[in-house]
Length: 489
Image (cartoon, rainbow, N blue to C red):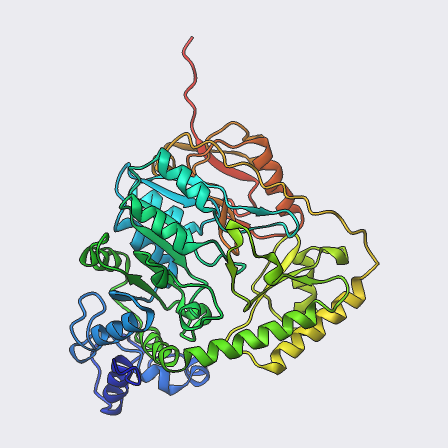
């Protein structure tokens, strides 16, 4: 296919050039009805193409023209049989792929360290999750992928599962043996769904891990905006025909998607696909080189450690994406949260996430030697300030065991509830999510029995200032639990 073309973006430019008189939404009408200060800042070009699904511009819900062409080009670029654009992030794409294959009571095998969108889809569908424990790195204090062994055990116990979901790569860039897992699951004729939110570049370079489509997965939700150059909130859902009904996927995604779809976001996906298809290999090569140079420089700073190929070798660490710089700061006697704040306050430098022991920095095609030089300089200054000034504590991985699921997440979420103090909730069934965001991995989800270990873990995160979210009470002092019936005497 001719990947130099951008059918949707070009159609928007042609339409804007005609300067039509608009009697349709959006009401700002090329910015003239908008706050002048905002209009001046954001610029006229983007306002000219902030349009709606009028006939010349096609309709994302039932594409037959330029959007369909743009999606077909994306499918070719990413090795899929069909690709759908999402203007509601990868979260909607993940929900669509689960809802397309799971219904009420169906089992879905998922890693415990999934994004909250997976659990949202499980609630909406009424499915029952079968959780796999990710491998925990007790040196770094993070979770990696799942093992083929754990998937095999789950399939032996639940051969009737409707789907298996895999994260590839993890937020920290680590991959299990995806091809091996896909082949195993397909022996049971079960579809494999992949959360590929952090893998937009991997399809375009041999120096990066294998992509979901290359591994033969049935569906993959990919955040083009995270690493692939499109605008925030724009993502794609790649689908392989066979075990999945492509038309049903389109229907489900349409049910989840606004009818007022953003054409600037859609056009950015069209243009990002062109750049990746034509120049993805050299962009990825350059990005990997810059990241590796930064990794080497960081590892020369006393008190810091940024893992690389030495981490590989186990089932859960089959491969890794070197463009993710996970920087272990524990030996400075500080938390990742401390490091994030220091870098923000002293260098106006923002990281992707922080946890108890690490910060994560993403290197993308938008970086250059100058930006990474600033990062290395800032880290060196931070290390100089904190080194040998505080007690260095051992890594304590106190991630609680996966709680007992007493009710399906759907039944608990919609059940009769009451609010109780978090510190007094041990033994109760939670009716809402509690997770740390980023990355959005659950500590508790609706239907699980709360343990004292869960409570202690949440309080520890709150005490050090990490972003615990989910409950309606944003202070996380009160949580919603299922009302217990009082015995009649």
